[in-house]
Length: 109
Image (cartoon, rainbow, N blue to C red):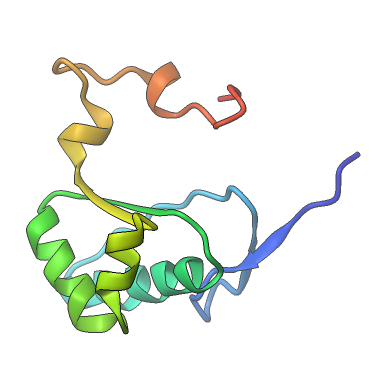
């Protein structure tokens, strides 16, 4: 059995999480989203992880990222974070394909 690797989520209420954990947050206001996503992304970036923010409005997400993260251009220029439109992530040729979109890097789903 392999040892579970945990990392700091950046979110106080969640604490450490297992590597590869995915979660979804429903929110009412932009501030609700910012209060969760920015600390989460900061923790990942500070730990030299690659981060993807799949957003409905990437331009607004990038603007928000730049407002709340120190030295945002460093991360963007290094390619350590990508902020992409959800259509570019979930829909390819107009279709969602579970096996492709939810596949782990090692090929597992």
